[in-house]
Amino acid sequence: MKSKIYLETTIISYLCSKPSRDLVTAAHQQITFDWWEHNRHNYDLYISQIVIKEASMGDQNAAEKRLAFLANMDLLELTDASLDLAAKLIDTKILPVRAADDALHISTATMNGMDYLLTWNCTHLANANIRKNVEKYCQYLGYECPVICTPEELMEG
Image (cartoon, rainbow, N blue to C red; front, side, top):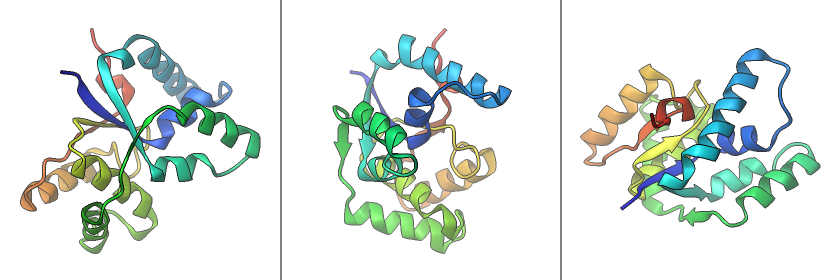
């Protein structure tokens, strides 16, 4: 049985965008391309309505490209339990109010039993301090949080 991955919007954005001139971003894009090419087939991939909403934003041509990429992805339901957990992550100040969509990514992945949440959002998601607090809080509530990581961390040797 394959492990399940929730793809956060930054993964799709990196796959669909033109190569960046910023060295760090360009490296992240290349790692994402490599992971997509060589590792994605080892996992079942999922997204949520939040990913679709975020992918729809910005430049219309770029948004259309991202949405076309998402068209055949399995969509996870945003449940009342997901909304409740996201609100708790904000209310407890584990995540700031401005990261409400990030809280929804975490809660949707958690409530749908994902093994991993794949992201390049290192501000509110793949951030060691925040991730530790999210995991502790989810465990406290009786939930198993997915491993929140970047494609680089999920490369197979």
